Length: 154
Image (cartoon, rainbow, N blue to C red; front, side):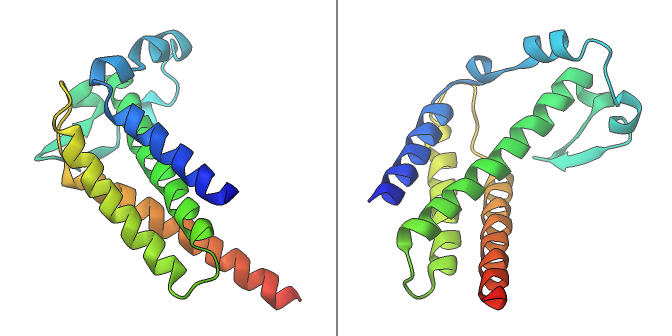
């Protein structure tokens, strides 16, 4: 039961964060204060990320906006990876737990993007669903690898 509550908590956090506008979620003022010396600017300036029919880079968006973009995408990856783990562990030792966790996480990501499209200042983006699903695949793969290693050691 506790595992289902953890999963429910993760889904509530997701629902709250995706119902916030971009302006409510923006961390640019904090980044400007925290990263005043623009660390790793030269290294980050080399990155050019194709995203939603554009290229996201320091040159195009500016240093702080680019760092925020990276943090937001990393948060997608980690957050949906955690949701996938929540589903995986809540599902228990049933067959296909890993596949179910990844598939349900992808469905949740699609539904979240659709719901987010009704939030002012937010858009629906299929590339975010890919990032979310990639997080699910990586986190589940790590969980399966750890499980195999533990079984091998016994």
